[in-house]
Length: 325
Image 1 (cartoon, rainbow, N blue to C red):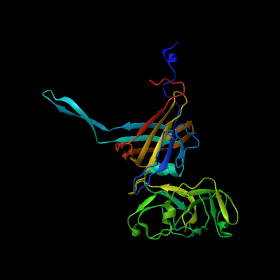
Image 2: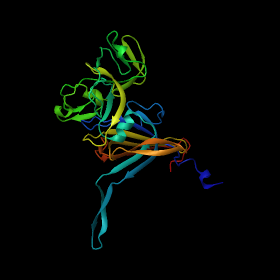
Image 3: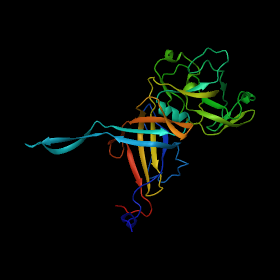
Image 4: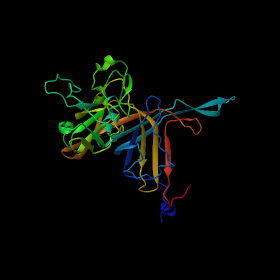
């Protein structure tokens, strides 16, 4: 009998890692909290709200780089005490699936919705002047949008929709529910009434419709549309290398309990640490898949338990039969 067979499973093993992200409140730097007591063992396909499942990832690598230094004293300069300086932690991986949030996280700057445009609009690399927005009626939710009678004629099942308020000169973080960009000056965005819908994360796909309502295939990430919101059709997503805005999200990476228990890595605050890039993955002799390569740096969070500044939490949920040490 092998030595490993004499002890219960204590080595976590899994074939892949699962990634989940949730928004940070940018104005206060308040992260979404992962509570290992409340959410222990959650179903991988049904993460606790507001965490968003972004699928399985490849080549997940953690690189803790916090420096540990010594205070030395005495004739021999022997270590007398230790302290941590220059907190630093980084994460890298590749998204195997493409979507709006995956592209935003891998790109790092403002992520834009290409709004359907007038055929005679002037050409623009981010999309030309869009078709007019359709105003929502009261009673709209994150999954069902209400319209005036006949207004849904502009859309068909399968269409992508951006759902948010118009731009009226707001400065600071913009985007309903989730900060999607930062506006320093109205002149920077040309006072574009559609700018917030260009960058909003409140995007959904039409699953079904009536003369006065549209049901979405998935709930809007930013929640129910605010009063005065309107809708425009989206034809594509676009990100850009460059720009001044940095995405910031809370992240949870899960090594599932295929053997030896579950391990979770919770980063309260992650910002991108590399420009946009892809990774080619061979599928067959003539076919390649393209994965979104993502790299992040961790920002500190003050733990209310003891006011310590923390970059990452690592939690381990032992298998039911595992020894404790």
